[in-house]
Image (cartoon, rainbow, N blue to C red; front, side):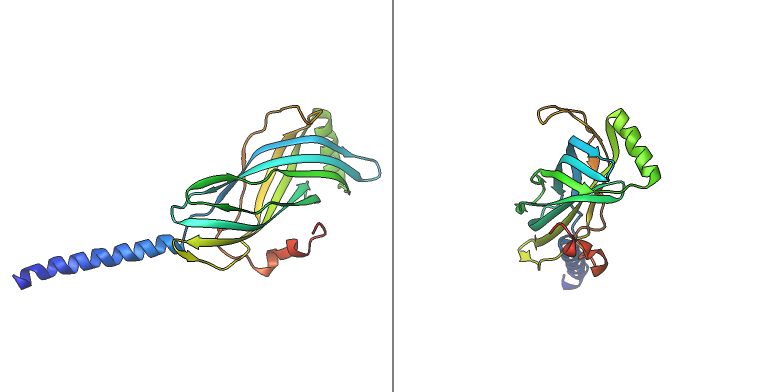
Length: 210
């Protein structure tokens, strides 16, 4: 009887061991958080002859945590707005906590003011055409985050995940804050979210907006 039950015990032990390994693997290698620009609007976007851009640009971004066992604490959120590879404004957004299997919305990022911007000849021609049509194609927003994640019951150290890049936003110009306009939800890109980025990507830390 003892000998006949040994293979069963070994099989059950192997199943238990592989289940444990799989469970640990699921905890230490969670799926990336996914970001989308869900709303974007331009109330002002005027580049003058002396290379000064006057702007009011608003975006709303969602963050989807697809993990059952990971809670995320967003401790720093910085957003920088770009147009044709030229950054023109930066804002700091309100930190928040995100639960398991959850979609959260960041505080709307509102970029407003004026900034020096000198476009290359081709970019200036594109800007003039986009102004004529009333829709701008090369707006972008980057997110610089500092987070802390809780994996199951284990809370990790704070770290800076890769920069979140929300590029190629196609945003129509509207005449006032109360107007509404169509905007296609646009996905953002980044490297694996739970990797701490290297110093090569820490240009935000000494950026002129902070």
